[in-house]
Each structure stands twice: as C-alpha cells, then as structure tokens.
Image (cartoon, rainbow, N blue to C red):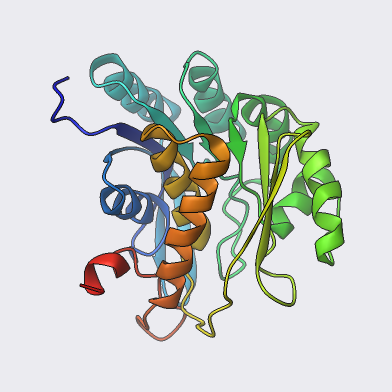
Length: 266
C-alpha cells in the first residue's frame, strides 16, 4: 500500500435496500470521513422508509468467502459489524475477528428503527458469548442493553450500571447510547475505569434512520485514522449529530440521516 492509500475499514452487516442504514450507511459514512470502506454482506433486507418487509441471510460459505477475500488480499485498519441475523453467522464472524489485531466496533443490531427484528432470538446468546469479547468498542442502544444484559435504563443515572453490565460480557469499551432518554442526548463511554459522557443538541427531526450504523461506522473510521477510543467516539458523535440535523424525508415514513451533510454545508 502506498502513502496515497487511505486507511481501510471493513463493515460486516446487512444490506438496506432503502439506502439509509446497514451496509449502505456504513460505506457512505466511511467515504465522508476519508477512509476506504469495504463490505461483507451477511444478509439482504427488503426495506424502505416504512419498515423491513423481509430479510434473507446469506449462506455461511458466502460470508466466510467475503471475509477471506478482503482480509487475505487488502487488509484492514478497523472492522465494524452490524446485522448478523443468525447464530451461525455470528459464530463465523466472531471466529474471524478473534484472529485480527485491529480495532473492532460491534453494533449489536437487534431491531430496526421501525421495531422490526433483525436478529434471531436464539442468536442473542451467541452474540454475548462469542462476538462481544472480540470488541474494542460495543455500541448498544437502550433496547439492545436490555436484550443483552437485562438492565433497563430509564434515566441518565442508569447508564453506568448498564455499561458495567455490558463490560462483563467482554468488550474493552462500552458506549451506551442514551438518545432515547428524555432531555439532551447523552452517551456514556467507559472501559470500567475511565468514564466519558458525550452530549449534543437534540434536533427536532424525525428522519433518523441509520443513526446506529452511522455512529458505529464513524467510530471505526476514526479508529482507523489513528484516534484513541475516547477521541474517536467524540468525533463520531459530532458527525452523527450533524447527520441527524440534516436528516431528510424519503418515501412515506422515516427518512435517513444525511451522511453528506458536511459537503452540503459548503
């Protein structure tokens, strides 16, 4: 690789046919932040602004082949995972990630923005036992915290208790996203010793499809660019906040965040 080659970041996730979340959001985020995005597609969704009409997992052989193809030739500076759908796909991806020596950002996707399930119930234990121990950072929302740990977050004071419960599952850092709490959105990041809280203005915009994918991909991108975890999260939070502010209507339902908001500001 020459000095002209940007850092490389791999997303392992599902395809969103509507373009607002999943692989599509990941690659848009990576391009916006100056890294080269690559993809391993684990599932294909039929999805639009109204919800997820269906999804189909790829065969495990196809997912493994994509991983081997990218990692064996191109290499990566960071990896981000999203929708993995089933126990066998979670196990396959976790096995590969355990052998890498690069930052790994796990977005433990359980449901879509519309409340549609994107993870088989029987895969939750596999995520906890196999996937989360590979994570440099795990980025659950409040519903995913409850799904993974049983901890219900109802106010900001609950965030640290939730983070500690997530850390017990093995990741190096837990980033608990508090955007669904009342008041200004607060995210808590901790490795069990150090603690950081990131706040932002709450934008009155219903078009927020893809926020979780976008944040996790932004964290991975900044880690690949050489930032430490707290700095990567801080910069990712700033990027996704701007993207939420620029979210636009699409179709008849919830539109996406604007991944190109910095370009449109010029």
